Image (tube, rainbow, N blue to C red; front, side, top):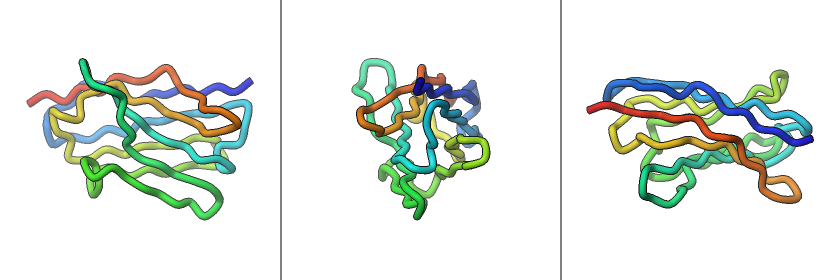
Length: 115
């Protein structure tokens, strides 16, 4: 059974850092494209970052490039999102997504950045 569980969200001041985790089960995350998305109140869900395949390709939305880093730990079957220099506009629920034969989503973790 495919499952994604995010954690690591919280309340931080502007300029602070957080590290989100997404632990996968039921498949090997290292073999698939894994994405981070976020959804702010009243806005559509938007793509944030991707880590893909055994070459560990990464890609970032322009709004987070240079501040966020996506990585994975194959041994823990987990994907991480290190978020530095956080801004109030980064406030959102952050979701982990796995692209298998269909898209699977975690339950999300709340990130709130105070100004």
